[in-house]
Length: 262
Ligand code: ADP
Ligand code: MG
Image (cartoon, rainbow, N blue to C red; front, side):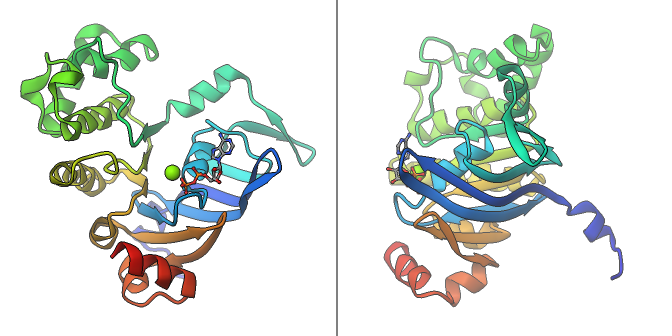
């Protein structure tokens, strides 16, 4: 094999190997394998209840896993391994890992009683102990990047849903994560507000951010995605180049799902 610049720069940032997850007796993730390379946009689709949110929450260690391994930049997420067994990390260690991973939810979860600027400065000043002046200028830069510089002193309730979601993205970016997880970031928005959020996500992708995006926006998957993974019933049914899969799905279940969302 010839080692090119591409093979060196595009290392796996996220490696998911044989992950299983149960809620009680309910076997929700049934052996998930997935790799996301540095700088890649990995789009995850699948019917409601197929385990997409659970998988994101496991990557972020908001959920524990029952078997398998999740690595982000060669670091085992949530556990330490000893003699082939997993042992929980401490809450402090888990919090440190989680800081490297930004997450944007369907609901924006902004602090209602704080301004847009205060929302973005909160974690950098409280968690990372950044000096306020530094956090403030960085927050203003991020607001500019998501097109909301003029709204720094507004409260979330004064913004549209699309604007609030863009603030939520800026807030996640303020922690300088190496990986961003998006869980149906546009599903709760009125249709006319979807585009502005997708445009911010596209710009972020073009800047080189590694992203895993759960979405039903097939146009986004086709245009911005580097890989498309279709999940159903807790397994990966099909994964590959988005354009190829959308134009020519190989599995009947993928075909059926795409025919409903396209
Ligand atoms: P998706 O995001 O693809 O719609 P989820 O990951 O939310 O799917 O859910 C997968 C399955 O796990 C569903 O059957 C759901 O009801 C179940 N589930 C999700 N979260 C929990 C939970 N906290 N406790 C019990 N069951 C859950
Ligand atoms: Mg979900």
